[in-house]
Image 1: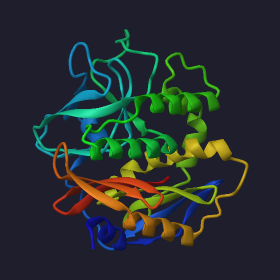
Image 2: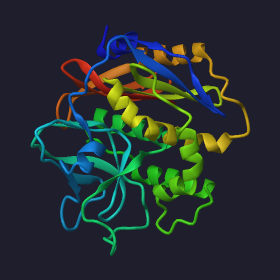
Image 3: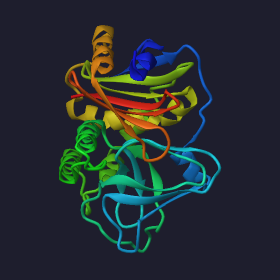
Image 4: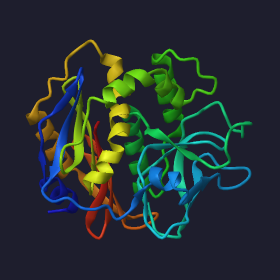
Length: 308
């Protein structure tokens, strides 16, 4: 049994939590663990890490990351960083060792800006949000294709810009720079209402998410503490997509659909690659799913999967 299958076999489904057309099935671990890393948001808040442009000129698909602490720091796929010349999202999850510096692969989610503004810091900060799920699923497949064809860890920047532009248009927001953040901000009150309706269960390390009764994706960490910290971002990212069909079907969360998705994820083709930081990357494709996992010491640190 491979490490992804072993990990998914080691969790059980909890009762679903439902809000309108959005449902989350908790993934409950038999044994909980203390995370052996800091999440990027915490590290930035504590000024234990710095994210900057790679040079004065900068490069759209790359940023410079410096871990100035003695602890590992986990950067999570899709998370948004704001500041410097333009806002970016992480192309995949990376575990950065203590004292390590890395060039990290990113994509832009703010099409109309390539400059420092008067009030724009030179260092990036966490936006407290991630790429909305529909676009993140496409990005997941793009990065996998890039890795399997030895073209690095790149996403299709034009497609991401198009996805962000569509979301900005749906939210009917006037965004001067076509920034994903403006779409989120336009629905901030609605999003926080939805976030308040979801609470992590005891030993919950992940969730399978459904929109309109159909499985959209999965997020899983190696500890309940890490998942609980990430849960508001997860809910916002799927809720922003769920708004597009709100008022239609109810969530109608069904356990058989969730179990079928988990089976397809277990059976997907898996390819292993050395990670940029510590551990290994496993990319999943086929069986109607796309996914990526970061592995350390034969243990899944973070796994994201989507129905495609």
